[in-house]
Image (cartoon, rainbow, N blue to C red):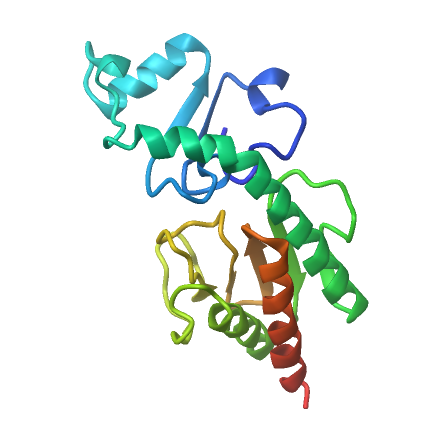
Length: 214
């Protein structure tokens, strides 16, 4: 199973409750926001080895694993990961609470038990979804000058608008947001290295979304 976004959120991992093999990305939770690339597989030893053979070659398998000479960052990221995931969950709760109080449907609800680091907000309006993502981008540490524009994305049936001003390209351990341009126009917020950064971005997002109703 795909365990992206789930690591360090629940008290146990999928393999503890019956999953034979799980996989995840190192530019998400377990990379602690500093690992620039890579992924992992874990579970039954024979299945892990089979996956490693697919990555390298049969007969070589895990003996020829790819670490890109990044061992220091891999282990440091893993050390930082629980702290970073904790900050992301705080940001999730704050995002849910703010938009719930403003009358929007959110999932999960504020203070609900979390199983990942994703927070959904239903805007019901394409302009509000785009305004939200633009505000998140404008309050990002990288590429704040960029303007998210909806466009086609492989794997999505609809156009997608995405805010991703992150130090590591594609990292969703860092605060980001995206949503497909189709009803009910839901924004999916991921990650966040500091809940204080999330709070600053939310102030701008609330103002931007509010202007769409004027």
